[in-house]
Image (cartoon, rainbow, N blue to C red; front, side, top):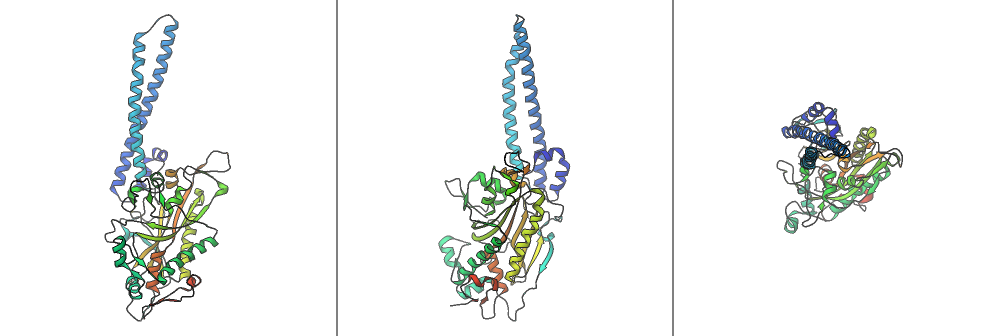
Length: 427
């Protein structure tokens, strides 16, 4: 959520930044906010003026009574003021609610390093690691390979749960778990606190962690309960310190969250939905950081480096892409994606690294201070970065390490987690 004080101080600069997102509705919301804020401030001024007038009249009435008189005109005028104040206060409360609603929907300000653009076609490739694998046969996609190995059953998954569910079988299950454990161990060695968060959240916490308009078509609601299944562990980790004040000695607070993720994935028309790449349920290891504002861009680089190191150790070919202004998510000041090479020759997103600055912490009211007992200095910065979404990394491993006989070679880094299994083979 943006700072209303910043908007009041320099609305033109804020509007100019928001215009970079190339979304007309964003500017319409901002212009509406500015007008509503003007009305709100006028209402505040009017109430203050009426209260001052009431105090003045009360003093005049008291003086009149002291002198032995009674000014009925003043008393009548004073009697009307509470009703006027109540009327304006009601109006102010409505304006306040409207302002908050708009502020919750306006996106974060973009960092100057974000390239301008109108669509994902304008995203900027900043780095490539390794080269695409070369095959002396026609490479297959992961679904065909897994089906050939008897390690996935999409049909029975749909029969049991519906579209976008599956049964994973045999050594493919071990591979899914191996990817997660490898990433967790890697981050644990980097002194990240491993955390398994609640897999459900209430509405208040969810609204603090995420713009619900972005995720409203993706979140599963528990019927009859104030609970939602989490679409990512980022959200419950972000909400963990809701309304807290962290000491600078407690920061940076760095977490490696592991959880299942549940997403409806509605509105994915035109997106790649083959096999297990985009499903209603998947497992993920997430990096999350609470830090001082002056440290957040350093952490942005470190989180990206962590993910790259994981993928390099797995031997995967990938590229790093900085999302352009129009493709950057609502709460991010900047996002860098990692896209892995797939067997059809295309690169697809497997990881996302975002600096959210103070946008999320303002919604959740997470502040920091120098020492216990002192007043808060300001809002913390939060960052989130995918270490591994296990299903997507499995897709990359299966397609990049596939063999001519239909088997899949296991990356050496995963050997300690695979019970000595070197290849996914049909049994």
